[in-house]
Image (cartoon, rainbow, N blue to C red; front, side):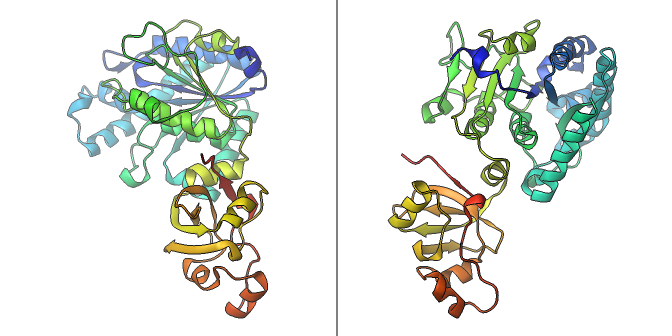
Length: 372
């Protein structure tokens, strides 16, 4: 199918802008921001809903204070982000106001997408801003984020934002023309439909001195988007009119195309935001029930339990050969499952006192992976 056809159903777009696109000589460049904002404003005039994920806060702060980013400690980088975020937003505000648009700042950490209530609160905020005609501009909350709650790069952040707002397309604008099969290739790959170990290997390498994401992080973002059943593009943000050109279906950059099945919002959150606290191993009959018949998981099909988890925690679901076939939210703790594994529903009442569930993992709380 031509690109124009693939993009026909897209209404909401997340545009990630790399630091190198909005800086000159290690300082924020209004000229460069104005050009990109012009592209985005044109998309909005065409009735697309656009969310911007922009890097550049640390560079804005270090440029304003005359510091060299490469010499900064982590606390100093956090301080530069605190200084630079307001500078960055002010530049975007001035540029968007020339097009009659207001902007709203959203700062996120990984904690904000790991916890369901905060995830939904973030979605409500995005939706409210978009409904009011305000352009949301997102960055990681670098001034307070620590290692344990950081995305680490804005490529990954942009993929999570695309899932929060249920965008049909993520566009990662960088200073390269797309994803190249090998170094020295004249043109980037036009389309990628699957990501394997060889492609990940070819994506290795760091980004620019002023950014944190190289091609490897962009491929990581593409994996999230493709598993959600949506589209992602990597394109050169220095190409004049690149965003309108992409939406016209012109063959610029690299298109990453997900499968036909669009993952429901709750299942996206389970797949990409919940960390597994343990494993449940099931027999072949249960595997068939989950994979082929799309059933919920019952205790009768469980043959093994490992890890320490509580009701409401995410667990990986394994087949008898040890391959992970899915992931879901358990209604039981590990200790409880150890007592009721292999038991029929009518037997569970006699083993567990108090409330019990017929299903260990409800189908709506589970995602099934593609297993070779």
